[in-house]
Amino acid sequence: MKTAAEALAALLADALPQTQCRRCGYADCDTYAQAIANGRADLDRCPPGGAEGIARLARLSGLPARALDPDCGEEGPRGLAVIDEAACIGCTLCIQACPVDCIVGAPKRMHTVIDDQCTGCALCVPACPVDCITMQPVSGELSGWQAWSEEQARSSRARYAARRARQQRAQREHDERLARHAAGAADASSTADPVPGDARRRAILEAALARARAQRDDNRSR
Image (tube, rainbow, N blue to C red; front, side, top):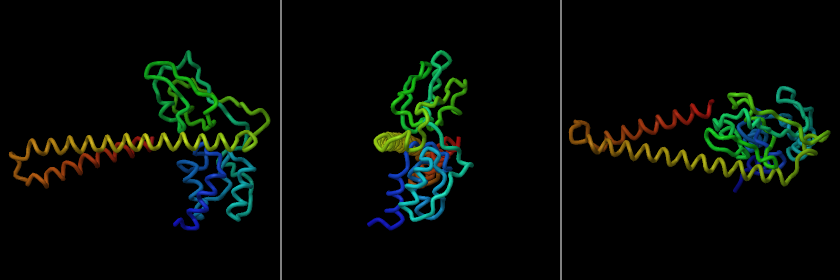
């Protein structure tokens, strides 16, 4: 059974716009919801949700509503990432940065944004090495939940979850390949090594997995 904090976190996550922009200071919307539910974060850190979003979180949590924390940004019109296709070099860094897989393209080929799937998170902008991505307002005077919808939030959340599952599967398969390679190397050298085969294989496997984890952590920190 879910704890009270877990149940509250689920409700709070449903009240967030699921743009995955990280302006709240957390890795994603669900992590932010968990932090609020556990008393580690205030409910005033989501610019895409705006004042209406804060009001929703306040009603669910019982915490008092407050103004948006300016350190997290300002409420404003919903943005759309636009790629200058003539300047795009096809580096794929924006594809890697997009949390909801709304940028398509191939290495060394022009990339483009699927407009109706873009959450306006702007994470692709700093990732571009040639500054060919700009954010353009697309909701006029509307901002926060007035510029977004429950359906868009659900769709964004589903695409983010699918992306995460794919990344985790790829990382698991990568780690398994390293482990098999390490085990094969250990088998090949075990007859000439004074260290018992099982112990050597275990040491090589642990070293390979440690390198894989370090590489993954380094990639995430960039």
